[in-house]
Length: 262
Image (tube, rainbow, N blue to C red):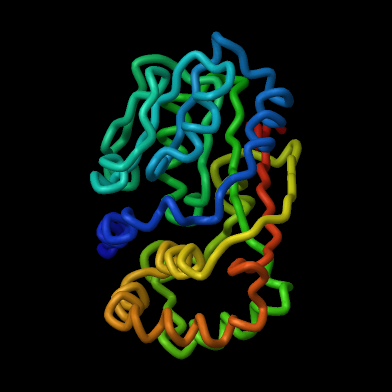
């Protein structure tokens, strides 16, 4: 086991207060997944590395029976969305095997597959997922093709550096689709769902969004220079504002994996 592995929990504890500013999932994604997977009032879900419960919330508002939501960060769970359908458990699944009280129909992993150690994930799947169950990798992203993005990124680079913290912790290049990890544990892609939308947001949201997506030394650097960072960002992006807002494009996607029986 990588000796630096527990650093991931420390990193996410520090980020917890900013997670509500992450790129939001488009609600239609959850409805489309529910329809595709035929999730019903009998379906049991496992939300792995749930953070503050954004995936759990999306499905709790739908038809499922219950959701077991697991995360190693107490700070994240302290801020989690509450529902009678959701049971939160604080466990670092990279260091300890979790066993649900019952087998689950689906395992969901939102924006966290690159943090998971394949060997531990394989054990968890074997212990908790029904034989014909699916693993679904989800992500939400904002577009980088807007005219203001180059100015934004230039300011960001001034206050941060190119860290390889994820690679350091997991000993691999980040794989946000989950393809490599899923193949390693014997699963293959069977379907994909994607939705897109446009939205508006102000500079304050943008600053907090930036804090939510920067790790370790970068987060410390941004917090330490927050007033300078915000002021410079406001000046550089002022010409792009329309009624005090920036325009952006957002996408949310899910890749469905099933056990490879070949």
